[in-house]
Amino acid sequence: MNHEHDDRMEALRRALRDSEQLDTATRAKLRAARARAIDAAQAPARPWLWAVPATAMAVLVAALWLPGTPTTAPLPQVPATTVASEALDVLTDEQSPEFYQDLELYEWLDREAGRA
Amino acid sequence: MTALNAAVTVNTTLDSKLGGVSTADLQTLDAFLASVERRAFRMAEIATRDRDEALDLVQDAMLQLSRRYAGRPAEEWPALFYRILENRIRDWQRRQTVKNRLFFWRAPARDEEDEEDPMALIAEPGAGPQEDVQRAEQMRRLEQALHGLPARQREAFELRLWEGLSVEETARAMGCSDGSVKTHLHRALAALRQELEGVWP
Image (cartoon, rainbow over all chains, first blue to last red; front, side):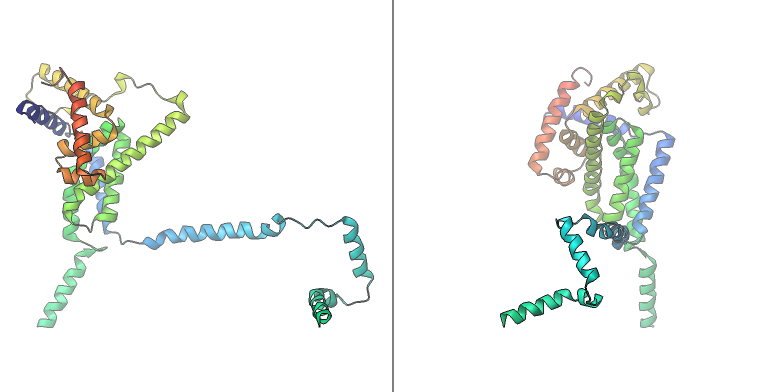
């Protein structure tokens, strides 16, 4: 850098530094901002604080989502006539309701017996 | 007696530590922030051309530095502070760009009358009115030229020449290499020389 160039840069730097003389209101606002920053440095770090709203949000999402899950799952496409006839069989059958509750178990036992 | 001395030392240490930062550190931090707050505000104001936004950005930068880096060595604060501030300014400018694209019909046309009176920024009692007017015009042109620079060039100029950081500190603040700082600064100076031809002696 030549001498002239340095002089110009120095003049720019001095002008910019002079422009830092701010009005009283702005200076007061900056002082207040600095005080808040120093207060923030004194406050103990609580990195776990973010977990509180995150957990609350997760619970909310789960509460809203879970009850809706069965209704959003695609229903099996079964012909209406089949459903009606199966319902009629259950109603007219002499088997106890407990039998139908364990129907899958009996079907499995039946399959196992067939293999043996 | 030795145990008593040890207890006093422990108590003194506990008293002088607040949230992991000693009282002495806080005083040093306060002094550092006081030394940079006006300059930082002016840099933000030149970049945003909005005093309120500039205040918010400087306040954010101060808070961030205090919360995250108060415990770091004081020599690291200048680069850290200006890095935070420049990131905030760049984020603000990105948001403004998006906002202006979305609401282009509402973008206010900047009127010369809306701009800050540069006379208010010149505080040098004793100078004659003619000199005041000339200095105010020079300042207005300088701010305009700085505002018009690409962000990286403006940052390099402000940090290196205005703030007076070393090349290494400027590189840390800008998150780039020393060589990049020199390149950005060289381009900034070339652009400013062209823009301010005839205005600055």
